[in-house]
Image (cartoon, rainbow, N blue to C red; front, side, top):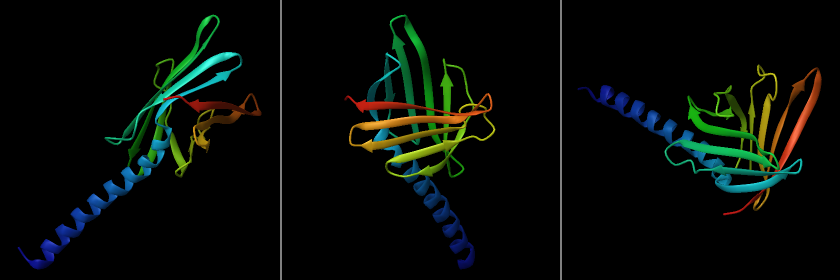
Length: 155
C-alpha cells in the first residue's frame, strides 16, 4: 500500500470519527432535559420524563391527567440523523411527523417542521435551574396559536 493511500484512508476514518463525535455532542447538549418534570395545564396535572442521550437517543413521555382521567399522552424520540437532531412526537402512541432542530444550545432547543399544520414549531428551554418551558407554535384555522407548558424538575 502506498503512503498516500494509507493517509487517505486515515483521513477518511478520522473524518467519520469526528462527525460521530460532533453529532453526539450536539444531542448531548439536551441532557439538561433528563429527569421527571411536573406542572399544571388548564387545571390538570402534567408529567414528563426524559432519558439521557446515552447511546445517541433521548426518549421522552408526557401525560396530562385531569379529574376525568387521561386527557393526553405522548411519547417523544430525540435522535441524531445525518448531522441533524430530530424530534418525533407520538401523540396518543401514534407515529407523528418529524421536526428538525434549527437551534440547539445548552439551555434551549427549537424544532421546526414548516409543512406540518399545527404545531410547526416546538421549543424546549431551561428558563432557570429546575424550571423548563415547553412551547408549541403554529397557524391553526388561519390564526397564529401558541401554548406554553411550565415544568419543575422533580427527581
